[in-house]
Each structure stands twice: as C-alpha cells, then as structure tokens.
Length: 386
Image (cartoon, rainbow, N blue to C red):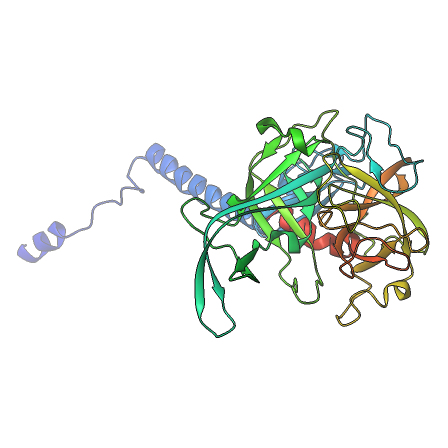
C-alpha cells in the first residue's frame, strides 16, 4: 500500500495543452496549428521579400520592369520617363520655351529653354596644408569658390563630371601655385556641404535661395582617374525632391539597354554651360550659353590629351573643328545634347558630359572629350537606389 501510494503521488498531471476537457483540447490544438501557420506564412513572406520582392509591390504605371534584389524591389521607369519607378516616373525632355538653335556659335540661351540645366557651385573657407618643393608642409588660409554644370535626371538626382567634385583648391604661396584638397572643418563637415545645386535658372547673377538645393550624397565613379579622366562621371543625390515646373524639368538620358549611344559620325549636337565664352575672356557670362557642335569619329580626337589613355566605349569626341567652337572652362559637367526620337517624340537627349580638352578653348582642329552617358547606365541606376 505504501508503494502504491508513492506511485500515485508521483503520477504526472495532464499537460496544460492537453487537458481532460475535450473542448479545451480542441482549442489548444487549434492554437498550435494557428501558430504553426503564422510561422509558415512568415517564412514564406520573408523568402518572397528576400528573393522575389517584385512580386509583393506594384510599380508605377510607366515602370514596366522590376529587378529583384535581396529584400528590395527596383522598379525601372520606361525609356522616356525617369524617377524612382515606384512613386513617380516623370516624362523627360519637356520644355516650355523655344530654343534659339538656329544661331551659329555660342550665344545666350533663351530663358529657361534648357530647364534641366543645373548650376553646381563650390565654396570653401579654411586652412589647407600644401606640400612644398623642399618636402615640408605649410598651412594656408583659403577662401575660394568654383563652378560646374550638371543635368537634372529625376526629382532627386543630378548628373555631372567627377572632376567637378574633387574639392580641389588652387593655392598661391610665396608667389608659387599649389593644388590641395579642401579638408573637412567645423564650417564644412562633409564634402557635400561644400557644394550647392541651383535649378530653374538662366542668369547666375540673380540667384535666390529658393533655387538652391543642398546635397545629401555625392557618388563619384569608383574608377574615376584624376590623371586620365577616365570614368569622369558622378551622381549627386539631393536632400529634397525637386518640384517640376515650367523652369525645372528632366533631361532625357539614353536607353540604358544600349551601352554605345549615339552611333555614327558628324552628328549635330549642342552643349550648354556658364563657362567662359573664349580663351581670353576674363569674366564668366551671367547667362546660360548654348553652342552647336558635332560628334566626330574618335580618330579626330587623337591629339586631345595625346599622352593619356582613352576608352571610346565610355568617351565621345565632339566639337567644331571647322568653325573652332567648343566648351570652355566652367562648362565641365554640363550636358552634350542630340535631337532624337523618344517614345515617338523628337526630344533633346543628354548623351555626354563635358570632361576635358587640350587646355585651350575653341580653335580650328581643337575638339574635346566628353563622358559617354549610355556606357554608365547601370552604374547611374545603381547609385539612384543606393
């Protein structure tokens, strides 16, 4: 009897999920099944969102392509439309002012006739270190500015040349010139803080704060070379979205499925910018200039920077070797446009970025080198979604 009582005393009680009551058993089993189903659904959703997130979102009506990335869907706007592909795909190449293209030679552009034009201003103030010829260093206080061009390609991004965003300073010390990079200080805590973008402008002598856009991130091409200027391209991400209007619109860029565009030679094209109008000019023009040039066979540019490597898959040779017209200092980063069909409409398309020349502006047989935008299509797209 004692043994039996001990056995009876140690007999396990019913598990809380398996009570004696059948209704409670059913409820408990249902809870387990529900929890298991929730777990399975969660795993499926994580797998879908991690491997094929495009199946879980709806892209913009003008974005017919979606690329799956781990836990991120990339909606691609159709050719002729540009944006994030999810919330907006804006039509590019719109203009509400007639261009004065019949005029030969550099000329003041008609007001707001190039509404994608961006004015990139650099300003820095502070001490910089320079390396002297004897190997020693000196600290010099500098207050300096600079300018470049660019093109608005969607509400948040501007395309320009990488060499425009190197924060290089020209320093005079003991009557000698030195070059040094601006360094971060309390007034300029980042590279981005040294630059400002202006949009919707024609006259740079009348800039207003309402036209200024601060920069969130600068993406210089990872393989940009300061010595050869290969891969001379950069994407600027703005802090705020731009509101498009009659003065601010997007530049069309090539169909990125075509890495080599445009094809052919002697293609009529136009370059715009606020750079010097000739080699001897001492002051910059206040008004945006447009100039008719031609895209040539690469062999025409064989003497341009003859000592540096070139890649004609990623570069364009352009100018006017007969009339002696070209872009000039200050035009860097601006666009080279051609007129072509975009979704059945004739539009001006940005195909090149002003990169470099022989150091002189204009002159017969003196073309220049431009960065070929189509070659960098995938790279541009990747930075927009970084």
